[in-house]
Image (tube, rainbow, N blue to C red; front, top):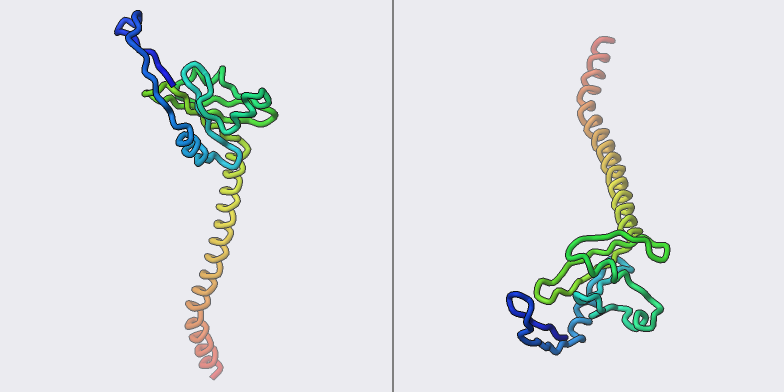
Length: 161
């Protein structure tokens, strides 16, 4: 990777900084990032060239495409796009030191599946809580009414004489 540096007026080049990147390290870090089951992360430079992508070979061969033209102009933020029939969320952040864009791609259906599962979980918790509350109230009612029933029995027996 290289980067040209200019003077304060951005008119005269001062030099070029060349950095030898260890792509294995980038691969190890980015491969561990998970965004749901299908989501992934990729990195582009400030001009839109791919620095790292999990499907790099498919992109190079033209089989797989990314929305690089759209995300290269975003420094921070998210965009929602329908790609190949699926709704995707592209979340972009920019490294201040390299101007690289780190793009996280999430699939909307995975996010809504999670909220559906959470909703079902809360409904089940509510049903269980109501059932337990009903059982506890029956036990308390039976316990409190037992002495009253004894008094009633003694009163009825004494009235009969």
